[in-house]
Image (cartoon, rainbow, N blue to C red; front, side, top):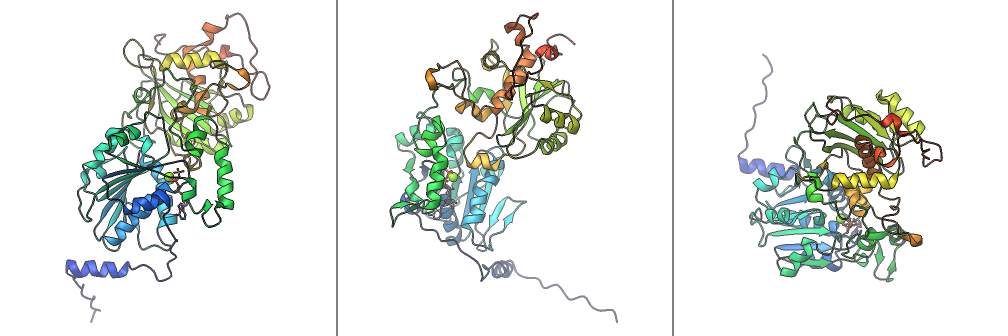
Length: 493
Ligand SMILES: Nc1ncnc2c1ncn2[C@@H]1O[C@H](COP(=O)(O)OP(=O)(O)OP(=O)(O)O)[C@@H](O)[C@H]1O
Ligand SMILES: [Mg+2]
């Protein structure tokens, strides 16, 4: 007689739920992390207000505090629905999700992450979903008890308000939109909203974080001293915001009178994965590179529309990777795209040779005159007669966000350098003379490209005079004549 297959045992939905819960019991050897909230984080646990934002310098324990509260709610109230949100989904992977998985959940954890539904599932059927405002379909199509927004200063007030509508799951007695942020400019909407009373702001301090400050001994821990010395290394506006926690504007921004994120950073043409081409094939492409290893290596693909406007549509901005590694990525993400008309880059001979060997594209040394180049970029950022600037950045162009830069609150793309790219005013130098050589990697790259496309040297250098250009390493750079390449559009080719 053939062996009989055991009969399937059907469970009622209630029994099935019970079985699932039993299987998902926390493992007995689980290691729980001690968490005792201090200062504003402690206040947050007891508050039922609808809108709360924790603000303060870097590392005070804001994100951990918010995530601990969300976790507490999910554990305590069966069926609770919470959501963790950031401006982009990509940046959440490198920040909030790391803190949640490594510091908040016990190890091993009984709260697996469901990739398809993008949510952490608790044994009691509570969930913590993750979403970016760049793809908010799930966020806006569901009901929530608590929404936690990381780095709220990155959002517009409209983004914040739109999330209030979704607070209607009512598995707990109050519904809450909580956020954390580092200080921004003094006229930021967060402060204005707090002034109206609609939003409660809670100030946090480094002393609130037990990892940094021992409140029995009343002194910084070893780790705290090390962390403070890192924060002491910031300069300008980043020092005031991240070390001191002050809401201050950046002083002496190089592109202060023209840069306007709302005008220059625009939605992507097609919200497809970055390995797909996203701009019309007929638009000429250019690439530009500023080499770096400890400092970010930055590469971007630009497209030029028939009116001569330039769009940064793909970008690499990453530290601690070799040129050969970057070339592999570039080849992968541009495989379906038209070849660039020109590749303009920094003068490092070895890096250029590696780039050419790995990608097969010849490169051209950039025209490095700083002031004239800044003027050229300035002219492009200025709004022209048709109401539009002539240099744009498509949102979310960075292929992979550098987690180290993100968590150090340093720029992670060329467009995020604008606020911290400032004039050097040390040693009696005046604004407009020379920029500080910091947070300039994307800025240099964009300047190289713009001066190439606009043939800026024609306006600044008499054509019959060869001016030797000295590179950072002291060698004489390529002379710019090889760069004279008419734009296919403007010259009617
Ligand atoms: N009460 C606490 N107990 C133990 N560790 C803590 C506590 N608060 C914070 N930490 C730890 O300190 C580190 C920094 O905390 P967190 O990332 O929450 O700071 P933050 O204020 O959000 O910083 P940033 O401004 O850079 O975003 C994390 O590793 C976190 O786990
Ligand atoms: Mg944080």
